[in-house]
Image (cartoon, rainbow, N blue to C red; front, side, top):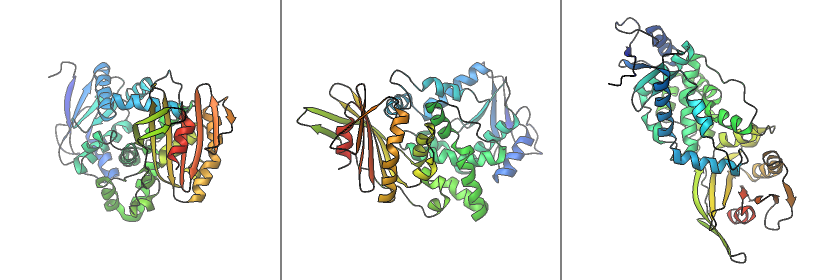
Length: 379
């Protein structure tokens, strides 16, 4: 038994004996009443000193969002203009993870509570709801979802946090100023806004049965989470094909696909809002599918490609019209030049940024071979 654990208590239904401490029966009863979920067994709760608590929440972070994937996202975010090449999101992720005072871990099936400062009631109720969701439909499946499907993971977690937010009353705070901070906050707190709205809409349509269905069969995309009608219709995403290799024989250069992730409507919305571009929700609403890809040349230089498929050619054209504004906001000081193979291209030092499209498909590529990759993926 770990010496740092102060004590272990079990949270039980109101009226049952044996529950005490921070996770009180009253808090659990609120979680049950406002979530519509019942506890089927005691919720194991551990109160830990701050240092031990921080270690455990960071371990949970890295289990669900592995360090290798964090490093990949660092490279992808550089290509999107969210951070400079010499920066990492690691410190921000750690700060966000350790800022909480209570966290339910579905893998260990334990609610961890920081001893000092103790969690406020709203935070405790929020995590109790997540524990109730786990008991009723299972949450362990989410712990391995992020490496397989970024968009589906964001959607599923937003739904769980949306239900918890309705019960606890928690809402998202004001957005920070820096683009990367805004982007991470918009995605990390999606449950407190769009997820909450999604659950409220489901309740108004089909009551607790509709909510239970959404918890058992999570939205497959953030598009479904942002538009309840698309969830009810089970409208899926459209596939986005990526070339495994892009060659330019004349320049004797070759770019190889190294990694890619899904990039959903929430990602598009958050990217535009990160740079303060107006009309982000309207522009992102035409999303039909997307991937964010990393191509690497023989010299190790990287190019990031954002490939999006849209519901219609008109919506794709709207994105192509918006792209120059995004590029100028994300890469201050870029110089535009004429590139015959694409719609637009810009240069900033060794970075080449290009945008183009065909029909309902659009591509924005940023890196050492921006024009080459964008032109090849749009064919």
